[in-house]
Length: 135
Image 1 (cartoon, helix red, strand yellow):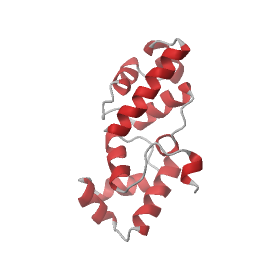
Image 2 (image 1 turned 45 degrees about the horizontal axis):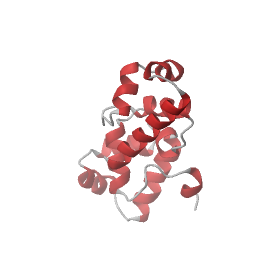
Image 3 (image 1 turned 120 degrees about the vertical axis):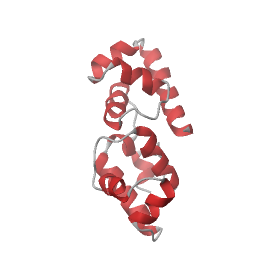
């Protein structure tokens, strides 16, 4: 989970630079303090919706995490470019085709660890910026 660790480390540095506590960020993001703590510990079980809110409060751009529609389209396009079916990717990522379909259709609330593992398996940088995704 290197990407998750890198993202959480970046968030901690920014939070501390602003002088915010974890509780401050939780309040501003309208998430539980537990979600902030778990995200900063790079726990894979935090939901993407909570991570998205935390990143937004801290001004961190990570569109594949914060934008479910863009995430879904990117996964679908990449999978098709690779000539893979939902079932192929499901087998490769130890998920179900139903889960992958939900991702591709912009389901908002996924576990951050599962999402990053899926993106990594498809060779997609989970931390890509908008400009990197449009190149």
